[in-house]
Length: 196
Image (cartoon, rainbow, N blue to C red):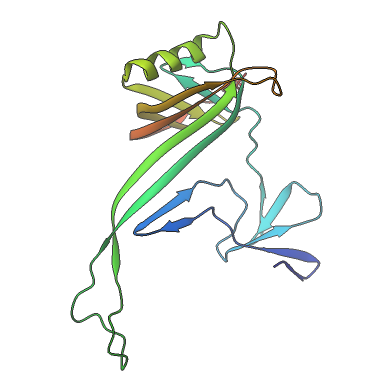
């Protein structure tokens, strides 16, 4: 529930976390929360002030996604997710004081990453054609994802799903794919053009 302090609306912290069994999935959300776990909504302003530092939100416009060096056109969404596997390391000495019960302890055992993307299917787009080709063959591929400033990642892995869907109500075909990331490398391209 939001509250107001000093003419600012404080919105409860949200990072997209979903906990299930011994697994926690963290969806990367772009700058909107501060270290205190709150976000300031300043009317309709597009700049946010956290600890005296003005920051602008990271916009989707200008995003560029390539598959093996070919730009994928008409993307409508892109999600980069981290998944942390936990290991239960509770031992006999891990008890609640005076309670006679164990206090569970966990450690991070592994980190996995996935990418999901959706878009409008085009008949003759090199990027979409390459995406579908490597998905159908189960081949390793490199997805390069950069924002309008040219900063992002080169992600190496393979597609785990690919789907095309059309309906009368939508009027056009759409496509979607999910990608398992095995390695990641940061990239920065000065003056990189935006996506299509």
